[in-house]
Image (cartoon, rainbow, N blue to C red):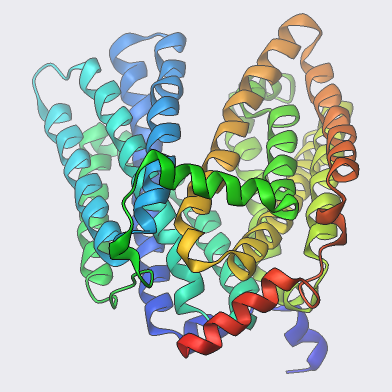
Length: 426
């Protein structure tokens, strides 16, 4: 294979060199596929039981507060407990919660309140788990392979985002919500068996600390002191708040030919992201990660604006795919910066902050897009959001110049982590 081809194809070296990363990757691939099936099944069942658009929309609102609260607390726990035990325990809890949904769906009269309550608990458990899961990656992957690990992790999400809803739709049409939940329970069981084989991953001296408000505050202060990291959170938040228009896709579908186009609109960004992930070998040769994040976020906004400027379905799908690809580029380099520069003893708490940065933005973005569409027009919501995204990202980069200047070759934080890993023999 030529050097040019190798430069573009996805780098799978972390899968070759790290047994623990292989286990995490395989577990995540399986469990996320099942989770996306449930992601489709819960609103489907709520819609079936209530017939209310508002009732379906309230699911996201019910998940928001638990995710924020337990995301921060989960980050603190990740820095004081064995991350392997934390991930396995929460995976078991999530599997049991899906089992509750399965039992409820098999009842003669399924209860809507159970769906909301379980959705809230699942958001809380997810907030507890993800910081520990993400904090594991820098401990099990070589420093120079972290960009490749970030791309592979993103690939896992994209495959699940494309196949999961399709499988979920098929299961719902054949066996209803019970079939979807039943499959998800099986995926959690398979995931737990894989995670059980992980080695213990603890922070050195973790037993001396407790997950307290003071502990969380220390993590927040560290994040504030790192303006380059603060920039990664701010850029993503700005991009999602101004240009995350998924809530109005059903209305766009009506303009573009009817309900049959809706699935294509949702799938297009994931397809663009998947293409970037499969051709992400070049990311290992990029060192100015901050500039890549800024430019990719601007490209996301520009592509969303172009979606609103055209009413031709193939072009709309193309621009959505470009947007998804740009978002994936931003995500790869944000993940690489986080994993290459954050000390292990605060990695969990910073992962909790990261969880909030990429979870809250889309929720607020849905609200902005819907409000703008109602006050102006459907197309103007896309165009204005995209333009505001480009402007907002540019102003954020100017306000936080250390992000734009960041270079992994000269960053003292990246060098400190390389030295720390060498001292631990990793």
